[in-house]
Length: 251
Ligand SMILES: Nc1ncnc2c1ncn2[C@@H]1O[C@H](COP(=O)(O)OP(=O)(O)OP(=O)(O)O)[C@@H](O)[C@H]1O
Image (tube, rainbow, N blue to C red; front, side):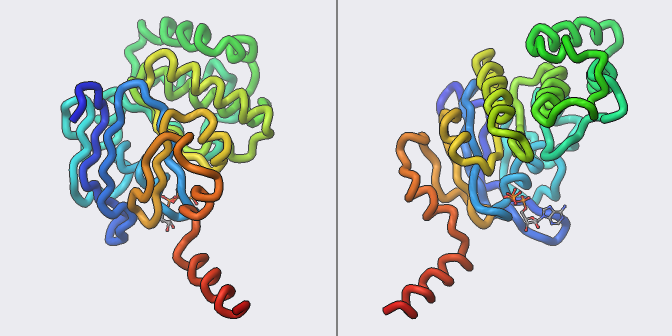
């Protein structure tokens, strides 16, 4: 294993109670890399993020994070080890201001530190400073997504797991959110992003990992795969069967 690998998954298996979803994923992520996890609906992308963050039934394999096994640990322990998670969908407190949301996110941090951490977030996200007295629910989808990323970054993680930040956003807002993620990557943060917007993900990520039926089926640099090849990898078994059937009918 290369020296700069910060997260290493070996034959990871997980799911929900008796249901198996992740079927033996192995992945090495170097420090500071921006990895986009893609694949068809139901491939297990969100489940893999949740598995790293201790939110699924861990069934086997190893998750080595900075030299320590975190596979199967409780979420709070994973968070404490330097990994933060931005879940899919709106997950702020809409009837609280931006500032109050940041204070809620800081609840695990000892009090004297909170102000410093809040100042650090406002330095990183100046647009949130301007909106600090605004109710989160009154902000645009893009601003709320930035707030949610900021709430995760407040924990000063070394790695950020981000689930589908582009959902429901305008193209301009998607651009702003991704620019912020790139800026965070440039500060040294390692990012594992689940994204359906493949075009945007391929544009920003250092590396693309494609999952199907809970297994990695492609792993490489975005420049090394064509749009057609990517489309082919996204076909599910059902779609393949339908295509083969249609081809047969047209012969
Ligand atoms: N809490 C849960 N309990 C039981 N099954 C679940 C749960 N969450 C997800 N699943 C199932 O796990 C499978 C993988 O879901 P997951 O959300 O990880 O896929 P995904 O690749 O992120 O897809 P999408 O792009 O549609 O979000 C799906 O069949 C889904 O129905």
